[in-house]
Image (cartoon, rainbow, N blue to C red; front, side):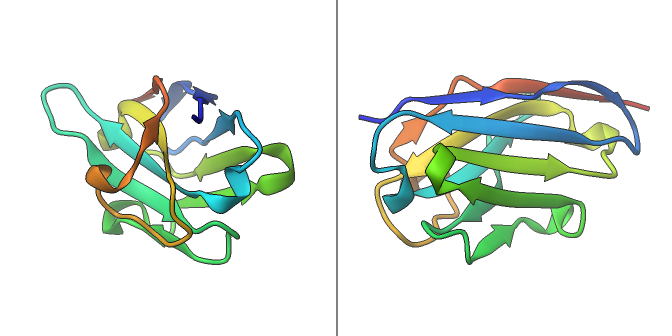
Length: 124
């Protein structure tokens, strides 16, 4: 069983930055692929970024490429999402997720554990 807790959300102006963290319980964090998803009001949850077990293979949805950076620290059981040049359309609840696999997963169905989410609001 893995428990995930997100933090770092908040209100920021367009063009600003935020860093989200996802703290995981358990001693097997380093064997999980991890991902970030987001859900805006009235919309379906969408994939944002994923990273493999070692952190060597990040992957992003097109809308955040060049602005967001996913990373992980297996020694600290923590994953991060650095978000720069934020836009109002990035406003959403951001969720971290863990998959009991080493490789990347790009859809929500590929993940086994979810956090409760953290709100990110970008004002124009």
